Amino acid sequence: MTSVEEAATGVPVPLRINGREHVVVLEPRVSLLDALREHLDLTGSKKGCDQGTCGSCTVWIDGRRVLACLTLAVAASGHEVVTIEGLADGDQLHPMQRAFIEYDAFQCGYCTSGQIMSAVKVIEEGNAGTDEDIGEFMSGNICRCAAYPNIRAAIRHVRDAAGGRS
Ligand code: FES
Ligand code: FES
Image 1: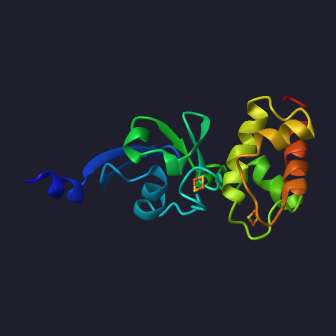
Image 2 (image 1 turned 60 degrees about the vertical axis):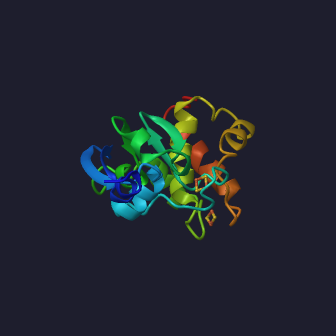
């Protein structure tokens, strides 16, 4: 088999997503975002730019927020990936998901999964102390519907409900 044929055929890539093991046959060039969306039907992570500037593809790898469009799927192998689909506990929304609904923190919804995945981490990272901090540490997530004030309100709510830890 030539290397071109090998590339076209792909290699089995074990991926652990939202606590479940998958093996996906992928060309090594395939991004984690495309693996999620095109191969695993996890379409909650969005592709707004595919070059690391919009944040709509934000997922967690080993508990840290990362841009799935700039992460090769093969590089995520052996790591714990969490997407927006893994955030709710059964029918129970994550508090940040509930807060986004309560505070009307989205309109079209396209940036929202990335916003929520980032927002949870902004609090965990201790960067949600002030509105300025929230703005700064959420600045990697762009929202063309300009839901920013409501996104900040949702984050403040979750921060304060968690006892002001930030
Ligand atoms: S799609 Fe990844 S940052 Fe825009
Ligand atoms: S809700 Fe539309 S881009 Fe953010």
